[in-house]
Length: 165
Image (tube, rainbow, N blue to C red; front, side, top):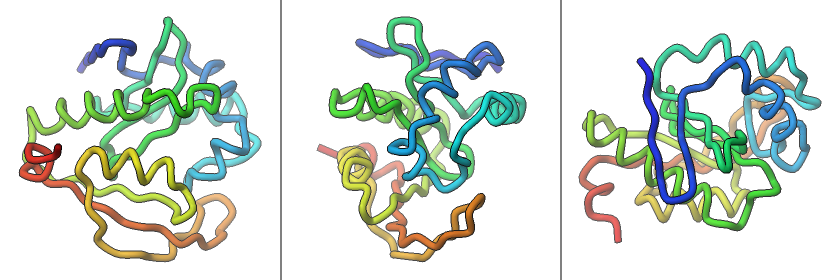
């Protein structure tokens, strides 16, 4: 399935193997990776190629700005995302999240689960703007390091998505 979503500033499109270098450049930053529970650090080209080779669901989008991959967002398993540090604080993730959630709820009434490390207030703000609500706090192990981190689990249903302000 080839899917592309455009917003005022962004193109959200399916991952391509040619994205590997941009992904490594963006994710191989400890300030980005520290918030993600499934990524190793340092992050290598092989890690990016492995990630890209598994993207077959049509529910993962590369966030492109000025034709460069600056992040990733998707609804596989959980609603999740990352953004290169150079683009933090510009409303880009809010814009991307709004577009992907609109796409999701246009074709499905399935609830979404997401979450964030308790210390990750940036991510929390994005999720709250989208209408996500707190469900529970849990300890989650980082899949690579095994380190436990306290996480806030949140959910969003179609009715809350429609009703958000």
